[in-house]
Amino acid sequence: MKKVTLKLLALFFPIQLLFIYILKQNPTWVETYYSNGFFLFISQLQHYLTSWIPFSFGDLFYSALVIIILFWVYNTFRSRFRKIWTRFLEAVAFLSLIYFLFHLFWGFNYYRLPLHQTLGISIDYTKEELHEFTCDLIQKTNTVHSDLVSHDSLKVNYEFTQNQLQQLVFEAYRHSENEDLQIPYRVENLKKSLFSLPLSYAGFSGYVNPFTNEAQYNYKIPKYKLPTTMAHEIGHQLGFSKENEANFIASIITMEDENQFLRYSGLTFALKYSLNDMYRKDPLLSEALIAELNSGVLENYKEVQEFWQAYTGPLELVMETIYGNYLKVNNQPQGMDSYNYVVALLVNYYQQEHIINY
Image (cartoon, rainbow, N blue to C red):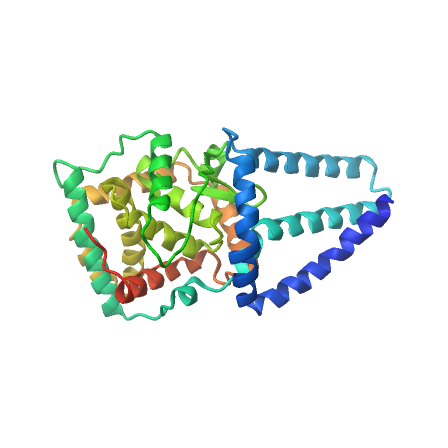
């Protein structure tokens, strides 16, 4: 009976690959029947099952997976590769099961319609449009910064506990009046990752566990970065699986909130992407724009940069390669370089639909 089950699960793997290929060609199906249908039900169920647990159950789940895999590898070597066919079936069957659960609980969102299509906006923009948008961000960033500090040269300090910031971000989602995104967040399920130290060395601010739909954040990063990091992971949690789309949503949620600290975090987050994009198009103009920023804003940027530099090492390079390939496999062909799509979304969204209010 065990062999029959293993064979069925192993056979199911190529069937899943074929099914995924078909879904990639039909994102409207995914958007309609999964992202705005089944996923809304299963994600709410996951939130009710795991949100009450005070620690990240998903982290423990991953730990258990690693132990199971190591134990399997140990037994395979210990048996000197006897019954190699059975071992092969076990490996493929295990992979097939994990692959199925990954997509069922969250992963099909990778194949939904691109966000710019659901918002009805373009992804094309000129350098002049980028320049205008960046200038607007700089003006508003300087204004909010001046409201939060006594002198323009001072960085903004976030005198909040991490739990308080969690609550602020949660309330920002709940009270958002943005009708375009339609992202209800009813049950808070945001937690500190038990793996924050290795996440720091790997260069990650957080992640969402697709099996439990818990959003985990790296509690070691500077508090100034926590609001957008938390908002980003919640964006993933709500079904926006692509990195660039989660970054866009994090920008919108925080920039449009009434809390000045959240607004500052969101404005500087969006501004950094805009300045980086401008640098690729016109380095001299980018430097001139940076010179217009309050020096205290640059101190906040420096604070984050120094944090990541302290954890820079070979693990980060390995994880960037692995994660970049993971993104390419999951319908993000540009991998880590796809983040400039955030700028396209921001420029066109605010040009067509909104102005960024003070």
